[in-house]
Image: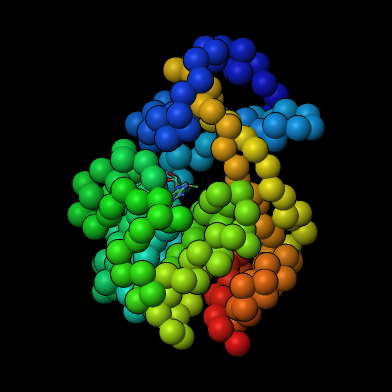
Length: 223
Ligand SMILES: C[S@@+](CC[C@H](N)C(=O)[O-])C[C@H]1O[C@@H](n2cnc3c(N)ncnc32)[C@H](O)[C@@H]1O
């Protein structure tokens, strides 16, 4: 996408969490990155996060077993659906607005950083990284290692990944809206072709790999 709208952004540098909260309240917001190479700008697909769960989401959630932690729950459509499917569930998110929107759906959520203290550490049957959340923190190996420690013995990580042929990348990005541009943060994209290698670095294997319409997901487990 070309960048004419970026010229409209003010130069104010805001915390990324604040700009993301604006996005969740409906302000058109762009992901600007990477910080090196040609700049790109993509409108955040917030409507995909704030809608109700659809048939692909429900297929994704059928991969979850037992108590399920929705990491980076955003406005909570998957946390809500997990509850409706009978799972003990909790959404966690760095952004207070996301947590509030999840709670307004009637789903339990807490403002937590996945890299900090999280309730039920070592006792979750499933941890869920949906909607590209394998990118959280910008180093998927570190994230998978952290998320593995949240699991009960024999637990699984359900990860949404990019389709075959998508190149895995780590990058620094910013968010931009009319209110300003965020400080930079680290993110990553992981394609399905690379997830087995990443999982093996934290002692996990791909137990299941599936296509959900245009989306792809894997289940990571201990060998
Ligand atoms: C791509 S959005 C996910 C949307 C969400 N899965 C949904 O269904 O609406 C990424 C989410 O991860 C959250 N996030 C980013 N870093 C995080 C961290 N370190 N700990 C917890 N949540 C984080 C963001 O605030 C954002 O809501």
